[in-house]
Image 1 (cartoon, rainbow, N blue to C red):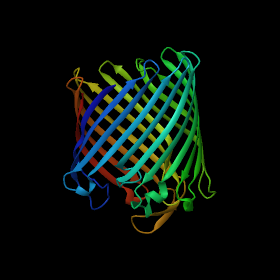
Image 2 (image 1 turned 90 degrees about the horizontal axis):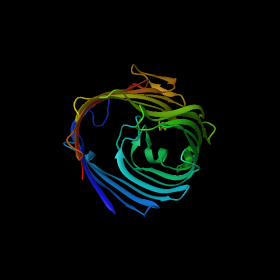
Image 3 (image 1 turned 135 degrees about the horizontal axis):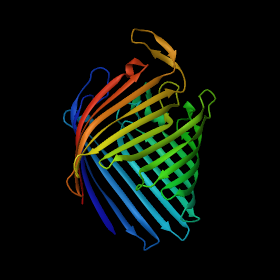
Image 4 (image 1 turned 180 degrees about the horizontal axis):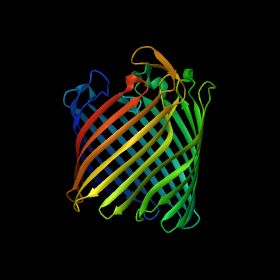
Length: 371
């Protein structure tokens, strides 16, 4: 049995808009202390048991009501056979965070999941997999946003079945095919928000030692709400996380995603969100480096609503948001155990709902220690 403790002090610094408001803006100094550990043991050559635990103690200098503790837990059992690999994984997170770019309050939630997967390796280059997952998402019952409690609108169970196939085409490139069906069963039957989703994706995985490494997936989704008054979606989805070096000391990372994000705005069950990100990391010395990057999120909602106008009145239209983040920072690796960093970031949302136009500046430092 092996134990790997770690300790992180992160986001220690200044937040210009802790409640993410357009008016009555309040700033504060904040810090997060995160102890945790990885505990694992090998079952000979036939398997492994892994336990992970992390606790986040989030503190604010002036706004004591925002102080909270997050708990993140995961357990995993892996079993290896000649051609089969089995994995059972359970996770339970009890956190207080903003759920997405639409909801600006930090709300308490508990997210649990249990999954069973089996993988058949036909050869060193070909494999197929089957995964069954049950997830539970619950929010604090009295937290309200847009006039609705998050619990009533977002509490749900999710059951999914996914099939996967992978084929190594080149020495450092693997092609993947995936199909998944998810049923979203919302607990509040009166809102009739239940939905079924089907996803089909073609992807590529690139070995970490390759010039281009990471993964890229693109495909088609069919999102079908059970209530006829809610909009369905049939169209492209995808995600990518790629990294490459243009010179030995310079690394560029690119990210992309397109998919549905559950919403509580008016009658909208979801919004379709596109995100694009880029990060450039430049090594100055072997242990010291600088990073610069940003992300753009574009959200288009599924149903029109009466949107208030700043000059008065309203317009019947579909809500559209753009969230931009930009950051710059430095990182210093003292040795294999110690890492420190400093980052400044700006977050800004521009919306055709004028009350949702908000911006925020954060300056924070990080210290990480792994035993």
